[in-house]
Image (cartoon, rainbow, N blue to C red; front, side):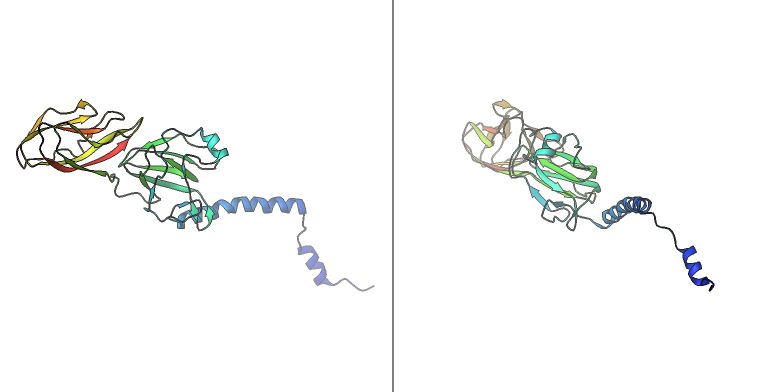
Length: 267
């Protein structure tokens, strides 16, 4: 009887036994441990935020097209039923959804922004208000939803810490000559108020000027000589209207007064 081949015996001894169930579990465990590492790598090399289907480079401006004064519903309802009332912003790497460590939302005004976020598309944060000119950071973000009570409000989303956080105010032209209350900025709507952050008035003749929130005087009668100028309001010391009241100017005489007002609208 011939002796067994030593090489064959050695190969059989060195060949590992394969346990289908055990090895399948080990493989799945290894996959679960590897995927987070891959995701973290993607997060480190990706530096932009995108809407659901369209790529958006950091700092690109987005404009609210539909005013949503009241929160549409609870986060759970929103998650289950869609994003009605909110702009829906998802974080992407190329075409793959991902989670961002930190996302900045910058409100360029003129209205306030309200933002909710999720890290898993199941649990949603409470709603955070971002006033015009403010920037706020949100951590561990898979998706954001953004609304504003004022259409035309613009905002930016980026993963870079913003350098500028001031609002871009709207401009109202002033061209009045009636000895009465002249409306400069219309009442913004329920729950909103006007914040005047810049004002320039030039009178062609001597007159007085009173600044009003609706029918409520915010100043006394300020004298203006011919070719006189008023330009004392700044962003640091804004002139605040009452809720849902127009910004009006009353003249003491039928004198031409021209200029502009810079303003934002906030909740």
